[in-house]
Length: 286
Image (cartoon, rainbow, N blue to C red; front, side, top):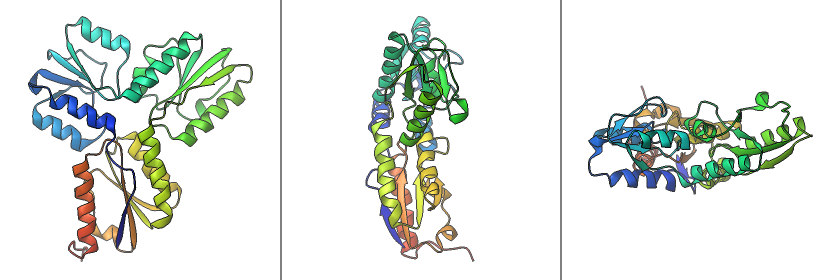
């Protein structure tokens, strides 16, 4: 079996920088991470071992620790102010591209536009975007698009939205709202685009794909769905322990990619397992 790696895969600079910020914290036991830093179990387990606390979903309660870490997904300015008012020191690991989406949404609102966010309604990043807006609209699919009375609309995206999905939803919004001046700001993150493009370039050369990343990770899931849509048999794993040799019995060329919150160590462990399988050092079930 031949193993082909995508040219762009794995951890993005936003996640890498967030982990670097936490690495500089001298007393992890004094820090609560306000939600999941990233949607990746390997990263979360690493932080747990270091002694950081986690509060679950951001926005539900003010953590007890003196220091609160804002996750890479960001929070609303309203929530940020509440944490500061409670006397907390904030360690901000918000991805710069998420911050850019916040700024874009606020700028559109400042132009007198009703803001439409393309993304998952219950996702922490989308909640952070919408909590500072007046009567925002969240569009997760074509079924959410309708005719709104507003004369001016501003559209932004959850950063991990697929380009094609964003364009399809934007076209539907314009079609259903011909009376409105619709302004779109593309806030899909560049690393997400790069990993999708690298996957698309790899797919014609493989008959199976392994996608590494958290099962709750939106950008990882988009890679899985894209590969499946192109008819390539796809295995989604969070770590090498989830791999099974029998799945690869008929595979001649296997592609490998990973989501933006996947640790380099995890990617290398999966790659190493595939190399050992190809060399006959991993046994199939009897």
